[in-house]
Amino acid sequence: MSNKMPRTPFSTPLSGSAKETELRLKNIFSGPKKRPPALFLALMFAVCLFCGNLVSCNVAQAEGENIPNARQPDRSSGGEREPSPVTYGPADPPLSEAEQTLLETLVRAADGEQPFQLPTASLLASIQKESQILGVVFVEDFLENTLLLGVMDRETHALTGPLFRYAVHGGVPHAVPFQSYDGRDCLLYTLNGQENGQYDGQAGVIRFDGQDLTWSWPVEGDVRDPDSAAAREYADYWNGHLAVMAPGGVDVYTVNPEFEWGKDEPWSMWQLECGEAFYQDPSGAGELSMPIYFQSLQWLNEYANDPGGWRVVSLTLNEERCDPEKMADCYTLCAREELGDGELTADLFFNYETEPSRPRAYDGLDHGEVREGGSKSPSGPEADG
Image 1: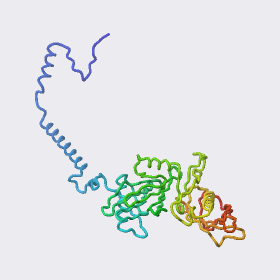
Image 2: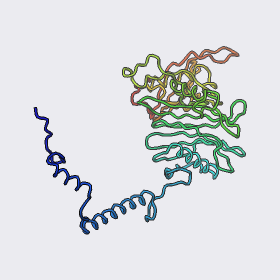
Image 3: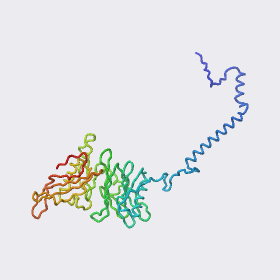
C-alpha cells in the first residue's frame, strides 16, 4: 500500500531535490521582494476610514449625541424610560387640589414599579387627616384593571409607605369609607373580575390611623409585605373565596365542593357561604329580620342562575304590597350585575306568624315577582311569577 500524501492546491511540499528545498527556504525567510502597488495601499486606507465613520455614527445614534431631535432617555425619576401617559377620568364632584395630587402621586408610583400601557385613572375614595391622606385609585388599562391603595403626606406629596396593588382582567371596583362601631376610620374595597372564564377578585377592610393603613378583614396586619404572614394568609383566603359588595358589607362565596372543571357550568363554581357586616345599612343583613336577607339573596342567585354574578343594592319593606290578612310582608329587592350593566327589581313575599308583644317570626320566602323592565342574566331561567 502506498503511503504517499496526496497533493492539494494548499500544500507546500518540502520533498524533492536539495537545491529546490534550499531555494524554497530562502524565499520564505527573505520576505517580499517589493511593496504592494500604491493604488492598492490608498484603497485599503480609504476602506479603513469608511469603517471608522460607520462605527462613530452608530455610537452617536445610540447615545443620542449631536443628533438633532434625538430622544434622550428620561432620568428625572431615576429610571431609563418616560412615564406612561395617563388619562384622568372625570370626577363628580370635582377633585380638590390635594385629591388630584394624591391621584397623580399614586399612579406615578405604581407606574414606576410596574408600567401601565394605556391607563385611565380615577380616585374612588379618600380619607383625609391633618397631615396625611389615604386614597383608593382605580386604573383601567389595556389588559387588566388595577386597584391602588396608598397614603400621601399632604405637605411633601411623598408616599408614607408602600403601595397596595391588585389587578384582574375586566375588574370592577367598589370603595366605601366608613367609621367602625368603635369609631375608627375604615375603608371597604372590592375588585372583582374574571380569570380563565371564572369570577375572581379580592376585598378587604383597612383601618387608617392618620399615619398609615392596616388590614382588619379578612386578616389582621399589613399585607403589603409579600413575605409577611398576613400577606400569605390574605392570598390563601382569596384563593378560595369571592366577596361581592352588599348593603353594610359584603356577601362571601366559597368554592362549591361538587364543582368539577370541564364538566359543570362556570357559574356553578361558587356557592354562598356567609355575610360580613361592617357598618349599619337599613338594607343590610344585620338590620333585617331573619331570614329575609339571605333567602332573598338565595332567590336572586337561583333566578339569575349566576352565584357571585349579582349584588344586592337594596332590600326594603314595601308596605303597599304587604297583606296583613294573609300575614305576608313584601320586600322589594333591587339588584345589579357585578361585571355588567344588568339591573333587576323584584317583589318578594314572606309569610309570618305573630303573637302579642313579640316581633314577627318569618316562616320563609313564599314567592317572588319580577317587575316589568327588570333585566336578568342571559343564562337565567324565566321569572317564576
